[in-house]
Image (cartoon, rainbow, N blue to C red; front, side, top):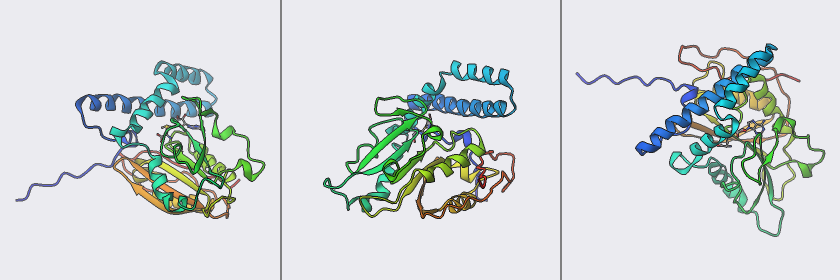
Length: 283
Ligand SMILES: C[S@@+](CC[C@H](N)C(=O)[O-])C[C@H]1O[C@@H](n2cnc3c(N)ncnc32)[C@H](O)[C@@H]1O
């Protein structure tokens, strides 16, 4: 009788990052990195729940735990490690590969394309080092002088196209937002920062990277639902790519912004599913 194939268990969201490492030492630090990232996300989630419940004492106690774990800074170091070459590399390389054909139209006699990188950990990634791109980098906690310390949700809304962007990068940022409504608001907000005024022929776009478990193993989100949410915001999927841990998407904005309501509704059940969700409010 042929040996029975072991069925592959669906991946938990907490196990999605960083990608596999090879050497023994790296494997150890990968484990520590994963634990730190997982714990930070979990604490942010319970903090958001305590905040919503008005439980200030619990919020303070969670803040103390986050601090004891090294805070956002340690989380960012762990994320950077996850981004390093031996763990799958810089995600913005995927974006550059995808837009390479359009970037061929660019030369240094015309203005650069404006890119907003939300959740930026480096000034030297593929996006930042591309000569055709003028990258504005923001993060809740700046690690380098070229990164502005700013919450995207608090960034003043643009008053003209000169303050808008041809592309926005949200790489592993949407899953950082601890509540489902906040994620919907973040996606909506992206639209307000995009412009079709561009030095080359390029449709304004959103580069979105998520841990694969957010769409493959969530009770509340799958690719179809994500597509529906994005479609009502005016986005059309033009590129996508999967690795064992991450999913990359390029969404073009077609200008038809008409948000519909999407609740947190169970799309698939099962004990090993995660609870990643995006709630969209009409207004
Ligand atoms: C997992 S790291 C991802 C970094 C990098 N983009 C990557 O792909 O590896 C998430 C980063 O997003 C930042 N972030 C989350 N929400 C943000 C917001 N509302 N505004 C600015 N940065 C945010 C966090 O501070 C954190 O540094």
